Length: 369
Image 1 (cartoon, helix red, strand yellow):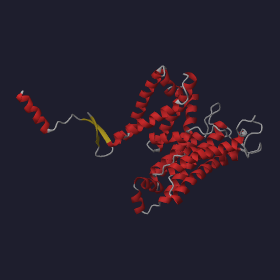
Image 2 (spheres, helix red, strand yellow; image 1 turned 45 degrees about the vertical axis):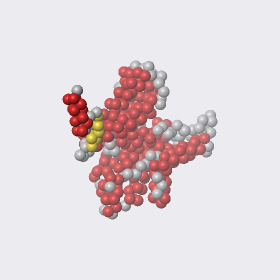
Image 3 (cartoon, one colour; image 1 turned 90 degrees about the horizontal axis):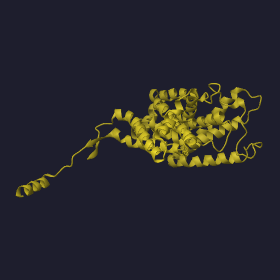
Image 4 (spheres, one colour; image 1 turned 90 degrees about the vertical axis):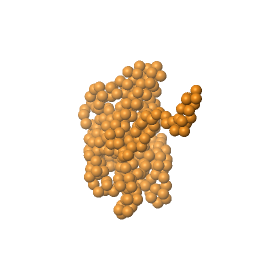
């Protein structure tokens, strides 16, 4: 029979192989799912893993989807490494979009392209304000950051709804719940003509390098990680847990807010009730699949964006529900959690052990017969 046997120490090989194994199992289960739904599994897997990379335009769309996931997951990686569980990045993303939109709507036809910088900085500020509420309640009242950050997502959604259905509604928008279309000067510059991907991609890649330096080459990053791995040792060394809490949450909120600002002033070009796209929750999976490492997060963000695009294509080409995206995301997360067990345990085949007394009785009975 199969049994789990504790390893003497964590397996470095399995810590790298676990996400790959989880992806392989997800593909197998996805194939079974396509067959159960009466669809060609080869065509289904092609939609998810080939179509998003088959052309330059497809790659640009993949990069556009991956940018907010990458930004949010970088911030969450800092939080999780610090043992601060920020589950409300979606709300911080929404507030970033709201703050950025508020600045963008102040532009006039004479405003120059310089306004893009204040728009994005406003997005960062919005995310930090929303994450700061979580930090304040945790710091002053010892409230659970998990519950507070998660509940604030719904509050952020209500604030968004109030604005686009109320004071910020476009008077010339035929009563649709949306703001005015932002002026061209406020919109994030695109990288290439004819493609939607913008400079947010370059900004995200630059921040990957910055976060790698922060986490692995600075004293501040060392303090954050020690506080997460060994809180008692951090206190003994004189590291401030309050400072780590505020730093982690403000960084995470700022990154989510930046992603929201890029989304509102980028492909959307206005504020609508459809700003919440689930990026804040999907980025949690991205962070863990990427092993909370900036470089790993790049690859996991690309994978998760393939699921987003594949879900949209499956809806239009195969007649499957768009919720299939969430199914693949969930499968990847649960299979990853299962495969991570192999980091600390190994699978052994053990034969059934027959007690000595029972064996002696069996032998005696056999002889008498």
